[in-house]
Image (cartoon, rainbow, N blue to C red; front, side):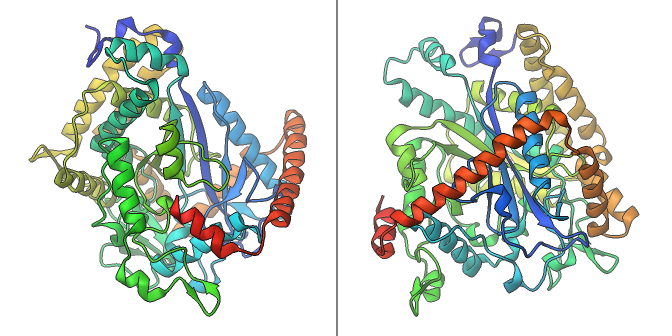
Length: 516
C-alpha cells in the first residue's frame, strides 16, 4: 500500500519534486604531519576567508570550511566538494586535512589560533564574535569539525503542495509553516542520525586536559566513551552545559524569532562580568545570553541567505525560510571528503519523510526531553540496554530505530518507483544493519581502528594519509583549479575594497548591527 501522509498518498507525487536541492559545508582542521593543529595563517592561495564563497574558516584560523553550491543530485555536490579539497591541498605546503570531527593534538589553549578576517567592520565583527566564544566557552571546544547539510525543496513543489493543503494565503507563509513542521519532525527523530552516523567516540587527551569522569583512558593519549557515538554532539562538545537551560521554540517562525531574539537581548551575569569593551579592546559583541543567533547550537536551523551586514534573524523575519541546515552530522572519517552519496541519499529521504509527517507542536518540557534523548545517544548510543523516552514511555533504541527505518523503507520504495535509480531503498537497507549490530556503526568501527593504532591521533593520521592518496588531482581538475585560483584573487581584492570603504566608527556599526 502507498504510504499515507498528512496530504494523501505518495503515488500522486510529481517525480520532479524529488530533485531535492542540497549543498554541503565540510569543516576540517589543518594539521601538521605530526598530528598537531597548524599554527600558520590561512593560506593566501585559498583567498580571503571573509569574502570567498567556497573556502573559508570557522572558529579557528586552522579550521577550514569548504562550501559547495546547490545541486539537485548528490553526485554533483560530492564532485564539487572533492574539487575544493583537492585544490586546497595544492596550497597547504605539506599540511594535512584532519579526517575526523574531534580535533588534532592541541597546544595550550591560548595557542589555538582564532580566525582573522581583516580590518573591515564585518571582518572585525566576525573575529570579535570568536573572541566572545573563547571567553564564554574556551577555545578548545571550538576546534571540533562537522558536516552541515543545506537542504530545500524545489520551487515548483511549494505551489502544488500549498494547493493540495487548501492553503489560500501568501505562499512564503506556507513555506515557513512547512519548514518548521519539518524541523519539529526532525527534532523528534534526530537521535537516529546520531546513532547511524556518529563517528566521534574518542578524543585526544589534549581536548580534555583535566580528564573526564565520563570517559575512559586508552593508552596515554586518548580518552573514549565505551558506547559513545558522537562526543561532538554530547555535553563535551557543542551541546555544552552553558546552553543546557536555554529554550528556543521551533513551533513557528514567529516563536523561533521571539525566543531567539530574547536570548540575544537578555543580559547574562557571568558574561557581564567578562565585559564587552575593556581597555579599548572588545572581548565579545555583547553581554547577552547569546551574542548573535549563530551562538545557539541546534541540530537543525532554518536559514535564509542574508545580505552583507544583515543579521540572520532579520533575514528570516523579512523574507522567510529559504532552506534548512542539518548540523548534527559528524565528519565521516572513512571517506576522503567527510561524507558520501549514500549518506546524502539517506538524509534526503529522512528530511522528506519529516516534511510529510503530521508533526504536532512541541511543548517546552518536551523540547528538553528530546534534547535528553539526543544526549543519551551521543554519549552511549551503542549500549544495548539504552532506552529513550517517547511520549512519556521508555523504549529501547533499537526497537524504535527499527520502527523508523520500516517507515522510511516503505517511503523509499515508492520514491524509487517515482524516480528510478534514486537509490533510496538501498540507502535505508544499508543503515538497517547498524540497528541490528552496533559494531557496524561508524563510531564502533572508528574505535576499533583507534584501539589497533594505539591512539586517536595515530588512527586519524593514518586515515589522513590514506585520504590524501585518494585526493590526487588529475588533468580534469585543471579547469576547476583555474577557476578557484581566480576566485581566490577576486576574494582578496574584495576584502581590500571592504577595508578601504570601512570608516572609523566601528562602535556605531556594531550598535546598528545588534539593533536589527
